[in-house]
View 1: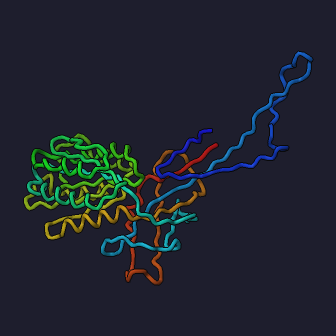
View 2 (view 1 turned 60 degrees about the horizontal axis):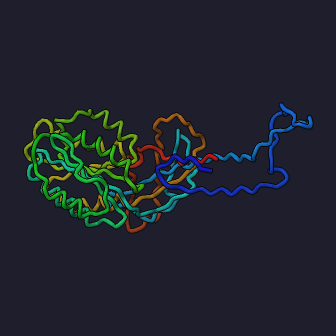
View 3 (view 1 turned 120 degrees about the vertical axis):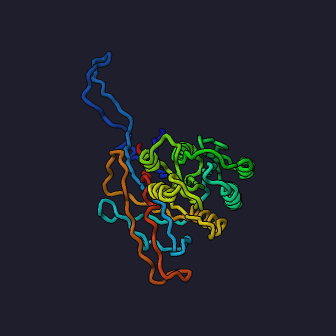
Length: 332
């Protein structure tokens, strides 16, 4: 029998029912409505039916210290989940470093200028930290959005496509993010990230910000952005970092501001470490409302009395959790 499973994470549940030969071998249906050729009533015999339903919610959490570095080795007691004001019992907490599917979204518009070359170098540095299980796609945008490369595990192919990057035209940032949100659904890894490198301006998109934010809310990926500050800003780029902040926030990612004084390679390394290190919290909701609506599960975090690795405190960036809840449902 095929079990329909709705999920974003792969989760296996093996049910081995043991049926008693006497009590479970058959089930008698409704009263007979026909007779056989000997005028003997014939009962309708139904095969045994076992019905089971189970819901498991999986939430991935990134925990950062005050310097923005991932915090590892935390105990399960450090995490608390609340749904509709009621604390949920966490069934398990696992710490994983997982393969990732990353869509690189590169701004090649005229406002970027020489920063395009800087971004290409940063992406090449980011790709050096990849593993054989990672996959990448590349989208560029200026006046229009171009899919330079679909998902591939060959980082060299992405680097080759970046060689022709050049600044030109206007900026269709929102269109590019919407295209990435559509493409990311074809990713093969369960950890999915949209990485945007841009000054954040937009003066060309057909999509509105509110439309793209709604799309991101239902997209199984986080948006990370590297916001490149420009010395000469026009009306479209002046508030670019704020736009990137909002897009990252709604998806559970974050925006890193680069103003030229910060080592871009170092920040890309931090983003790489962060998107790979996560805690996965699993719980079974006390009450499941199947209304198809987005649900928030706000976390609370308690720092251990004896913090590891010398940190004096921790904080959870709660935006990491504002993503669609992954409910694994099994029916039989």
